[in-house]
Length: 205
Image (cartoon, rainbow, N blue to C red; front, side, top):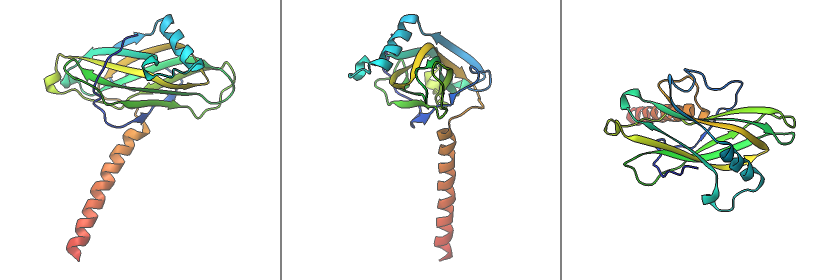
């Protein structure tokens, strides 16, 4: 599999959308599908082997990767993993990835966690579709024309047998976000309100 080092533009770990009734549509994760890569049978086998025998060394974790040409005029972008598979035994499923994005001029990376801990209870051999997406991220004007690489490695997988994995890059405004994405704005809003409240009390005193 492809291995890339990179710096993640987003700065907060996130939870994914998890169980889905359909694959990503235009408008959900972006207006345009910029690139997509479907994993080979050999790569799927590596993922399934990691479910049965968890790698002891982090460098042995199976991984996925994709690239795209950056254009700040087309911000924002999103990284999406579409996973199809079946439940190994009755109960819940969990997938956790860690990864990031880097331009060809970047060195090192700060990881972000992509987690799909599905609260649904499944029957044995039940088919499952999981859609795991990053928060929106942007590329700078200086990065126009540069190739950006996105990479994610499988950290944990429970009660799940992979059948197919597609890695996608979406561009443009979207309607689907993780709850942490909204939490960021809530925290910023609360900080502003508390700041104004503190100043008001200070001058009132």
